[in-house]
Length: 84
Image (cartoon, rainbow, N blue to C red; front, top):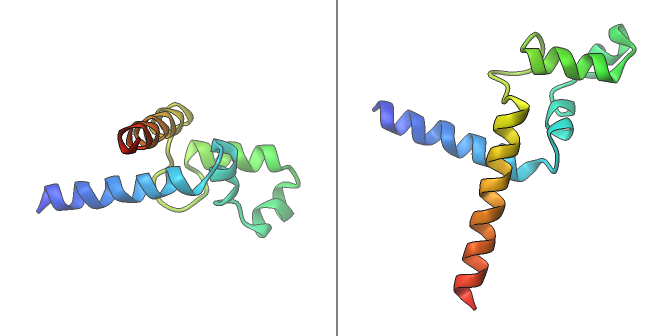
């Protein structure tokens, strides 16, 4: 049962990686208009999300996001070269 939950979590993270072009885009997706209204600073709102004070669920760290993004890109490229 735990392995199934880990697979679901991994699939969700893979979806996050493919959905956003950059880590900042990922953080921005978790910032609300209310956050921007009260903070009046988009960079501060990003920092709060990155630190886990805002946003939904557990937030990927920048290094983890970039590592997963690179791995997904490498996987995509290897699939493309295998098809040729």
